[in-house]
Length: 325
Image (cartoon, rainbow, N blue to C red; front, side):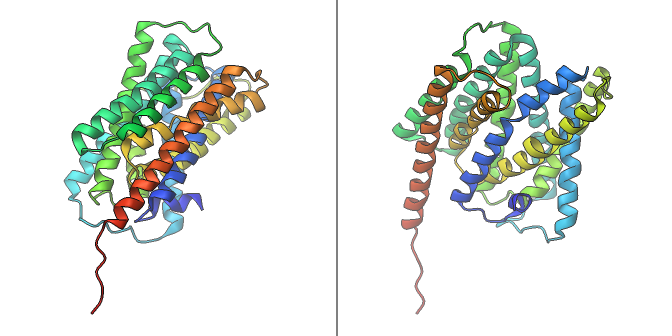
């Protein structure tokens, strides 16, 4: 079912929300897998980002060939030049989002990098959506975003001992900016009916990102030196498939039909998924901060998703229905 979702021409808001929830939880598994790759080999962040994008691209191309369905037709045909520019910007934003986050983790640690990146993202997106598209959060939306950010801080920083380094914060802000550009651009074209086939958009985006990351990955070394080649290969295949090809396909499909600020908050489920993995699979202790932060973030996400659904239903009920004579 999952591979077909990105190509749906007219995704409903409810299904878009489901796509985003699954994508956020899948993204949460990438950090644990990446940390294992770094532990078992000498692969660097840029090289890992390259293989993530290149592997995801190959999987998406395989899905596209196997489906053999005609590309969905957008409401307003998009000129080729504009589509090329859009995919170019999305690909570069994806490359910045992923690689700058890895650099932030390396410079200032996982906790601070996660809080700054995922905390700045919703703020940048909310401001951009208000200025560029006139999307308003409303009082309830503002409270939900604030609650989600508080929950994020409690979840990630609750264990204490985090060190803030300016270079890492700058990398995290760069990562948040790349994420904001991706979300706003996807929403802009999705709202105007010119997003075209989401599977095709995702394939093009990954192709651009892989090409942009190739020289940086080559400088670090694309072939990992390891005594656990099988385990590293399995981890790379997992990273390329679940938190990349699947998650980004669902993300681009959902972000085209859901308000940008709502998208940014739902994507905060990523650290929730990471925390669940850390407790259930990696044997980390379940702390009060983990429980409290997760609960606050889940309440905020559910509340904002419910508000999104109500707003959509209200808009549809106000749309005049033409009756046949």
